[in-house]
Each structure stands twice: as structure tokens, then as C-alpha cells.
Length: 178
Image (cartoon, rainbow, N blue to C red):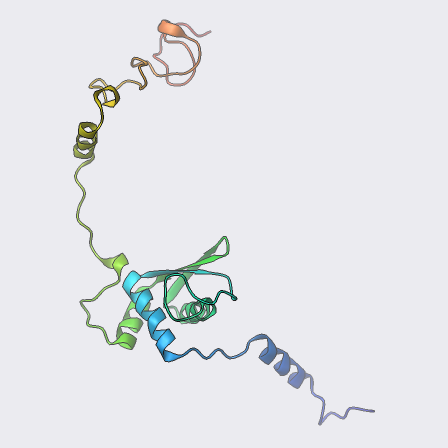
């Protein structure tokens, strides 16, 4: 049997292989909206590279594969930045993605993802230390002069050395040593 050029074409073989390796993924609109709503609300999404899991742990409705494919699609359009580590995709919403999802979900401009919300300012570090010391029992409070911890005076350092300040590390700078 000879194959004529009209029947056999190397381009058709390549096209068939491409179709087999990348099937079309149809995701129901309800699942797409659930994923997009979660992504917009949080600003980030973590997706395990596991195509067999029947559900996503944080999003109710879509399978893990559907969430993974939607994130890949959004990344290809520049709406999401993906970092892959230890079999997990960490997806971060970009500014263009915020605009896209805001239009897709018909949200007002004042609604922003959780990663863009301002948090209450924290007190200065000295205030936090004083608050922390108030909660500690007297034996564990910080000393006024700084110094080392665990009843070691203020010389710091490690190893033998005794009172003369020797030893290793940030010693008292005294004699002792070599």
C-alpha cells in the first residue's frame, strides 16, 4: 500500500498530535465565576499541581484542574503572576488582572482585593517591647542594661572564659583569650 501525498501529510500528523496533547477545557460559567470571585477577594490563590483532586481546598465548586487551567489562562494574558514551588502554584493578581476581574464581575472601583487593603498601623517597636514585657513574669523580663539572657550577666560570648571575658563570640573584650 502506497500512501499518496493527497492522503498523507506530515502537517496533519503534527496537528493530530497537538490536539491529543492539549484538549480543549470547557469550564462551566458558575465555576469560572467562583474562581474569579475568590481570586479577586483574596488577591492571591494557591493551587496544588494535582489534576486528580476532585475539589479545590479553598474554592467550593470547581475541580483543582479547572482552577489550575484558569490560572494558566490568566497568566498567559498577563492578569496573574505565577510562582511554582514544591508542586504548588502561587498565583498573584496583577494590576491589569484587578481591572479585568473588576469588569468581568461587574464590581465597583472602590472594591479592592485583600492584598491591596491598608492595615492598621503598628505601634513603634519600643512600645511593643514594653507591652510584651508587661505580660512576662518578672524572671523573664528584659533588663534595663541590655545584656545577655539566661542569667549570664552582660558579657555575652560562649564557651569557657569565666569572669575574665574570654570565650567565643561577642565577648566582653577582656583578656583571657590567646
